[in-house]
Image 1 (cartoon, helix red, strand yellow):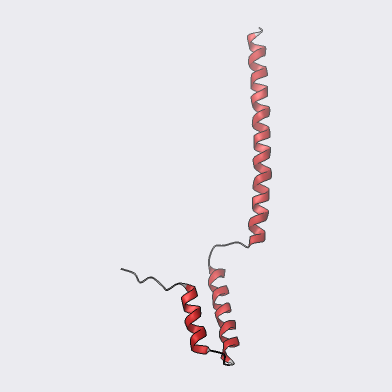
Image 2 (cartoon, one colour):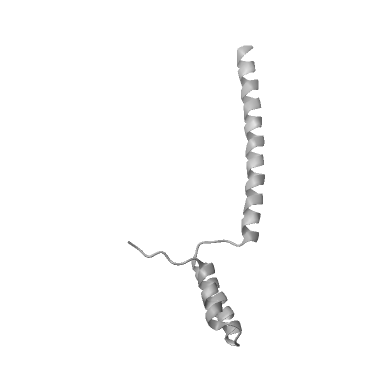
Length: 86
């Protein structure tokens, strides 16, 4: 059975308790931040800005697809009516 890592909040709290108010705290904060950024850069994630941009594109695309579906339905109905009148 694999070991489950402790929650990051617990780790940060333990590090802060070990370091206290010494001058090391700033260095530890920088190191932890660099480690986290490095870890996140290895993951397949996007920034919030990229996500929002893609969500906006998806919303516009969805609206366009719905519009085209309505047009297709209308044209199909018109074609069916034309065939019925023959």
